[in-house]
Length: 576
Image 1: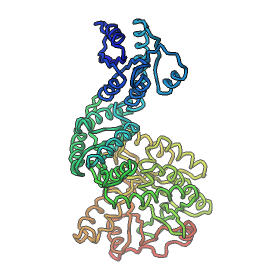
Image 2: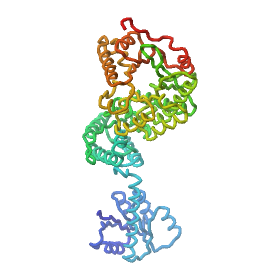
Image 3: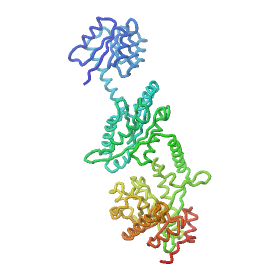
Image 4: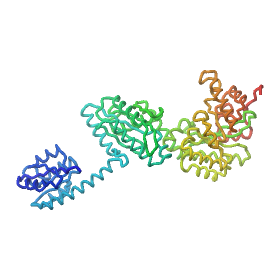
């Protein structure tokens, strides 16, 4: 245990020597320093750190109150005992206001002094533990947000004095939630501890690493010359974190995304520098993760636009500004409508409609995808029931479900509740999910899919061919429909790949054959031209969807389509 450091202050040499003798016992673990005046004591306080100051009150020159004030200004956790034979109430009040910890009447008994000192040390240790919890993250032992702000403030002050710069890195583990969800929070916590240790091994002693919350960390790099210094540290961190972490028998491989900002280049306030590093980190995520990005002015423009969209999403939820449009699925042989897909739009002022490609990813990032998804599912089921009660055949109404929605703990009960509330028979509902979304946590995924299947709900794989396309999960999951991604359909003429459509034709024909062999429905998305339709018909694709047949339209217009049929039905090629 570290020895306690004590400063004894008295301008009477005899008393000072007596106090020194009382504390000189080998049984007492004290490092004792002497000062024979208030001026000398204050100089020693400024030059060193003490756990306890024991000072006389009345001294020639600067008195004990000056010593008390200096000690508390240097470190509020320094304990101070004032020795006095003077009982003035005003002096007592002044001392209490300055933070004195105890008084002791002179001449003092040695045992009484040691007792009072012991009480002070107990109080000090307790306060230090409280401050530790207030300033440090309990899980990792790293500085928390409050201490980070203080360190960053100090670093900026030194940078201003020395003409240097301060680097700030905002770090976020990639897909950390997957580990928590699949292996549990205990494993996730141990992984965070492992990450914290590796971060510490990548930085200088003068740098500060803070856990900012969840799986986010912030690193302060004081006294750097330019962004290149921060970039070198970021590269070290990315390489270190990517090495496998052995946690409870699991070999976990994780990556990290880092945003970098520089004081004063990117702002002169703490808030600005932190916000811009956070913006750069999100850019690193968008660029594929496991990388770093240095903040640029263009990022700020994108961040402002993103914030504007997020606010618009909140308003749309509050003011009911979301609408659904409906696009038919068509039998490619007969032209009959075989199903309908519900597609969300956001209605802004002036009746302008915003397509989901402009806001769905942001809704997922900010958590609004859950209430938006619930609204879409409810409205689609409600409208489908209206059509069915009017005697109109719709096949199934398809609703897109994001990975975040599907893996939410209340997803299954939410589907059941909406079906009950709208009265829609589950066999008229089809849920569309992407391959990558289904391949997360395959065991609970399988359970949810079979529960939906038991209800009568149909399952479709959206954008098929862009994800795993694995026969193993096709056999394991109760999939009803494969939707060929529109990028393959639109490349049947080679516009995208420039190979006269060879690649697109090979992929599309393979998916059609796979679907037929597995007895799955196959729907080609993005059909926009006659030559695409002709190829699909020639290869016996049964259903299609796209602008060639109909754009997504409001419910009223789709009602007319159901009543009168398509104005542009497919025609069979003469060779068929």
